[in-house]
Length: 213
Image (spheres, rainbow, N blue to C red):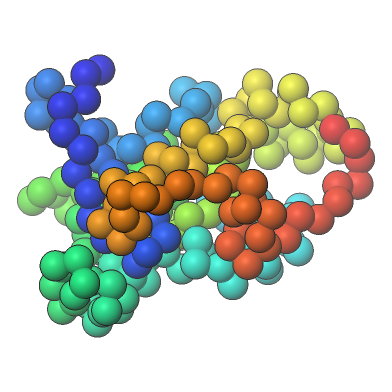
């Protein structure tokens, strides 16, 4: 796949909506760049919170969890005006924004892709409601296979779940949406992975696991 153009939109100062346009002119969600198991599906944060409830409660308070808010009319007004965007406009159905403001955009079990002149099914509407925001699987990978395995084998090894679609997040994952191409960040922006991941107010608290995996 040969990227020709990167399209950017405001995300309220934390994320950018980044899309890749291919030779054929079709758009691919930016999060496809992350290494994900092809046949694993996104299950949503409710599936994750069953075993990681403390992390879930912490995450709910973060900007990641609320990242769809800045796409709505009259939200993030100052940032939008500063960067020449219409604060009255609803950006919540713009694919270029949704790639970084939702979980699993356009993927199996993820936030449904927005296609011009095509309505969502009831199932897709339900998925859209439950996959808003940057949820666990945006960073840790789709959980349909790994979550089942972990419940069956609590003393699992890290290599086992990585082979089933989970991801050890690193800076390359984050930089798909956190990068200086964003109009709200500036040319001198440097992404600090360690600072971000150590700040519970930005992602979630790190609660010790019961077993050493």
